[in-house]
Image (cartoon, rainbow, N blue to C red; front, side, top):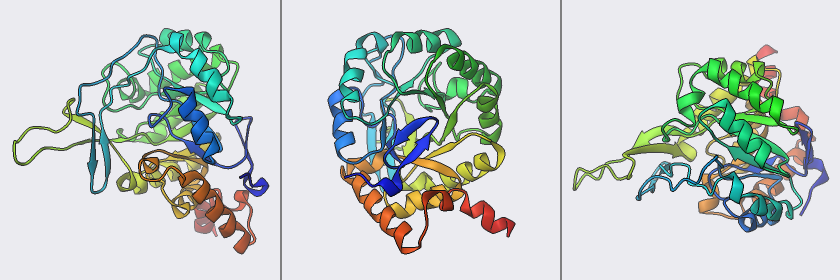
Length: 304
């Protein structure tokens, strides 16, 4: 179902609601992205796509914890050269398809952008916490973030989103670098570095030893990062990290998010998008509000 009251415009993209599939959960096949579109998402982000095929880290690559999920997938992907057909299939879902891409340098990002046709926007993965040479390996350096963002923006004919890592001293510094580079929006946050050890054998559980923590445990961190970025930047902030209920989405938007991405929650509940949208609409109607009324509300409350 679509709800006109929830429709938004984000970096020039028309979305029928502010919920977005986060990168890395599904998205190596167009069919899986179409399924998310039919489940009620306003847009989808693909799994991160690189310049060459990657197998990812050895198993175990995912472990469920009492506070969320810990994963070390290692950016497995078929490469952009093998992804165009899947992208075209994903577009059949009739919602914006944002392609997450990663690289080790400006040239790789630009090569991928030039080689993919049909993306409605690109999300630069400058934040994956468990891949050498990629993700946070470049996303913790504001000079590199600005340089890569500028190169991508110059190459692309569609909006550029930059996904930021929380594994830094000051995420605002990184967000400002992305903004200077021409980013149309920033996405906050990616997973937080974590580790799990089997207490009976003493071995680390993940094949990569450590990985990224997602789920409810990181939501307060995400809310703080969104709040800080909204206050500092003049471009939209897209929130992600631990959203599984409509209340989580509202909280992130009050912190300053223009839209929210949902990831780990779909492991337990594939209908989470439609459930959040229906409850969110009820909330807005009951309080005689529109979406713009709640974006950044926490800032306005403090200023009063």
